[in-house]
Each structure stands twice: as C-alpha cells, then as structure tokens.
Length: 476
Image 1 (cartoon, rainbow, N blue to C red):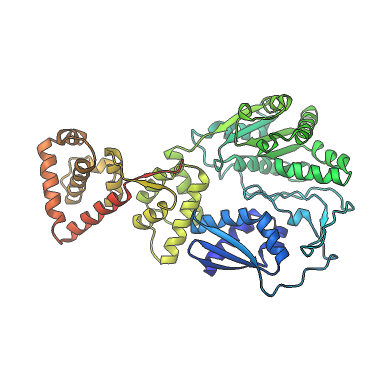
Image 2: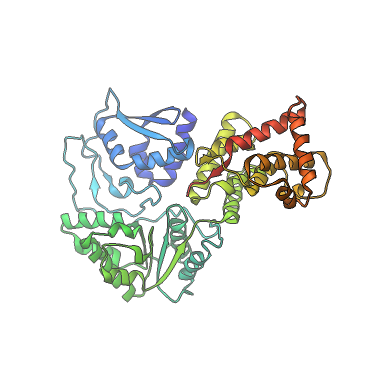
C-alpha cells in the first residue's frame, strides 16, 4: 500500500510545481485497497481544495500505477488541524493548480493565504507580476520520431533554429501523442541556446491565460497583464480549443498574438483539433492560427510504438524481452501516454511479484488497457504462437524440423482450423505445406495435448492462453 502511494507521489512531484506539491499533496495520508485510493486531508479546507483542483491530477497518476479503473476519494481527518494563520501566505506561482500534463511554472505574483473554508480569500495586488524560470521536463533528444510525427518534429526544431519560414507554429493531435513534449522541447532548446539569461518565455495553457486575465480584470491591473504576455520572445500556449465560445478571451489572445508577430517573436500553439475544426472562434483568430506552419501528429505506428517501449525500458533500466515488446506494441495503440502507463504498470507488477517480466504478466497488464474479443485470423494466431513459444515468424515458416518449431507450427494449424474458416489447403499454402501435412500436424498436436508430458502441458497452456485472450482489441 505504502509503495503504491509512494509511486503516485513521485509522479505528482514531477507534474506539479514544488510549492503546489508541498502545500497540498504532502499533508495527505493514503490507504489503498484494490483500485481505490482513499486520501485523508488534515482538515476540510485542504480536502475541498484538493477535491476541486487536484483530484484529476491524482486520479491520472493513480491510473498509471494501479490501472485505468483507479478511483480516488478525499476526505477530511476526523481530528482536523487548525487552519494556517492568514499571515502565513504563499504565492500562486508556487501553489496554484495546473492541468495534469501542463504544469504552470510562471507565477502570477498574486498572494493567496490558505484559510478556513468559511473565510474569504483576498487577492491583493502588491506583489510584482513576474515570471519564474521554467523547469523543462522534455527535450528533442527524448522524443521518438516516426512517420506519425516527423513533420511536427521537424517544424518544432525549425522554429528553434529560425529555419522555419514562419514565426508561428500550430501543433494539433489527440491527447497523449506528443504536443506537450514538442512544445516543451522548443522552449527548452531556445532557453539552452540563450543560456536562459536573455530569452523571455511564457508557457501556459489557454485556461491559465484566461484565469490570469480574469484576475487582472478584477484587480484592475490589465496593463501589467498585457505587458507580461505581449513583451516576450517566445509564447507557448497549450490547448487553445479552450477558447471556443469565450469572446473576451479570444479578443485578448488575438491582440497578444498580433503584438508578438509584429515584434518578430515566436509563438507555438497546441490544440486537440486542427484550426479548421475549432467552433465558435473568431475568424481573425483562426486566421492567425493558420498564418504560420500547421503540423498534425497522428497515432504512432507499430514500429514507433515499439521504439517508444524500448527507449522507456532503457530509461527505467529494465530488461524487456522482445516477445513482450512486440506484444505490447501490437496491442496498445491509442496513444503514447497509454503505452508508457502500461509499461510502468508491467514493471511495477513484476517488482511486486518479485518476478522477471514475462508474457503471462504482460497479458494480465494489457488486459487492463484493452477489451477482449475472441476473434482470430491467421496473422494474430501466428503472432500469439510466436510470443507463446518465443519464436520469430521467420523461424516458424522455415523448413527446419526442430521439435519446438514443428510443435509451434502444428499449434498454428490447430488454432487456424478451429478459429478461422480457412480450409486445410489454405492453411498449408500459408506455410508452403500440403493439406495432408496440415492434417497430420493437427492430429499429432491433439495427441500430444492429451498426454501429460512436459511438451503436452506447454502446448495446452499456450493454446489456453491464446484462446483466453483472443485478439486483443486495442484502445482507439
């Protein structure tokens, strides 16, 4: 239980600002039962604050450790601690919540004192509105390039080298495909080039931009807000689809982009949708989004998914067998975040069981990420058999008469005959064998499975595993 919560805390430490983690996550105690994480806060104020602002972050982190079914609850301790005095103030730059994937590192300079839930929180404007150094989590070297993202990668590198003819870049993709990674890599690279001393960078989400604009309007401090975001060398603005239907916010973003483009600054925007698909958005703003280079990121193909798994396994310093790598790459297709989460869970489960990573453990973990459909074709049967016998398709299709190869081929014959509409002749053609060879192989395998020999038990277990899992239908 303590190990699981410790792993969740490690993820949150990386995603949240140090002040946010220290003030709101550190005081929590946890109890883990199955897929449920029960958190206890020192008082109701902290509990309510965490529920309202950080529950999504915590649930996302828990899902990476426990699985997609993870649920998180937050309650106050029955013996609450006294709320901190109002003088003990903290700044929003350290404790203001942000999205789970886009930690805000720039402070608003607005002081907020933790108070009891019945007290009103004041927003004085005495603090200077300045930016803090950004702790970049991603760079270009750690980005896995494939056909799905090579254009976006090249464009992102181009804007850092001024080799891109446009000074505005718009990245679009579904969630978890690398938009944030590339945006942070752009900021990281430009800051590295300038030695972090001469470059003024602002990195935030459109929602954070809107929140800070509202705060400046309430505090009658709009001029300072405008000066902060219109006088930068690089603006990285995530999730601009948040602006849909918000006219006041759109006006300010449009004015900001115009000002930055007129002074030659670089702007990188991201969204889950291409500009043409954004609704309830001012035409001028859409035009500005389209004025630069637009790059879409698609779902990774098999080779890219496999490369991601190998890179991450190396990063985690674990040995990932080739057959397990192939199986994970084949079945986890939705996005990079799912791939990383599945691998992390596989590593954690193997450590908890004190076992080496194996196909059996991998099947159990993958089943938490994808639904099962007992439908098999020849290709999926060959992949499953190769994984079960630790062979390659080339070995399986060879003319070798080694016993393990013959048994594996016969297993393919058996499953293809049982679960597909292929005739014995069609099955034989697939392996350049005659239909009589296929029939003989199936009969031999059935006889072997009926015996209590080591090979017979291995075949029976392998067939049962393949039939139990069927063809895993990946999350899409």
